[in-house]
Image (tube, rainbow, N blue to C red; front, side, top):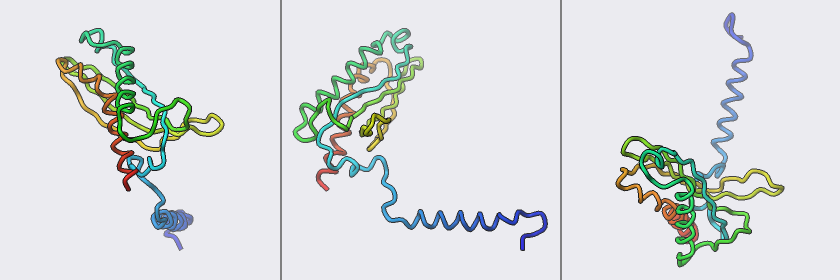
Length: 171
């Protein structure tokens, strides 16, 4: 019998909640980290795509590249690495898997901070939103005199993907 003023349902909710947690925790293989290279096993063809959130102050205040110039360098860097890779998935626009490199930038006086996300997405049948199969992310910054290094982030995306893909292929 619950104490006076207590909700009589509370013990049942607690027991039900605990039972659900135990059931979930006891399910073997119920989850796999999104950055686990094994999620890339069996992928033989990828399309390439990029995304960019560009802080226009990089262009207007720092005299750096425009968003369009940076996006082009990002995509070219990815394509160059994938084409030159001795092993890895082939690149084609007609496939269910897309390797996407996304960069977010932020300008602060004398410094460009960036977030880099490289992910593989699988297209859903019927045209639904793509499902993220694998993802890695990094953050960093460059001083303005190193701004040219930002253009290497597309290469870094492709290299990170190929490294993870290779680990999956070797296991």
